[in-house]
Image 1 (cartoon, one colour):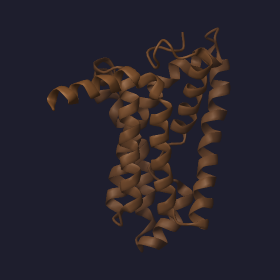
Image 2 (tube, one colour):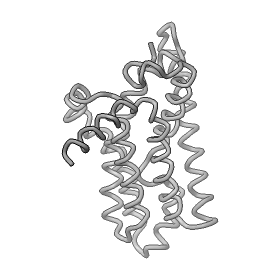
Image 3 (cartoon, one colour):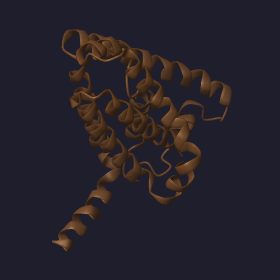
Length: 207
């Protein structure tokens, strides 16, 4: 039951559960700017820290702004497996832009878009997660497990972001996130076998 269109029918159930949990943990920790990185970004760019605080808020605003406008129409128009792949590719590109720019305004814009894309991922994963974590449909049990995972993963990534920025630089952390996003696309490949075959066929015909 927890497949819900996320994966092809031939993917084993234990693999589906592992991939759903892995993608969910990563998605919970997604944010445009980690608060632990703000001092490093502020000192590196020589700008006010309020820019990056605004970027942190923009990620949350993006999650809320997209809900009433695009979510229902977007959710019904495209297949789940295709959406997740394209969204992870988009987030990887935005992370690369954030890690290579020296303009705080661009980081605010990318943080807003990352927040908007994050909510699409979470909406698709929460249903399967509820079936996995609470098969009897007990919401109290489900949220008592979900919230520690969501909050704990966010705090862990914030600690890692600070540690990596201290050892290397804050740009390295964004580039690392970009690589992890592309890794999520690879993890999602069992769901996308038919999708990529279709794309290859279309490109071959156009050629």
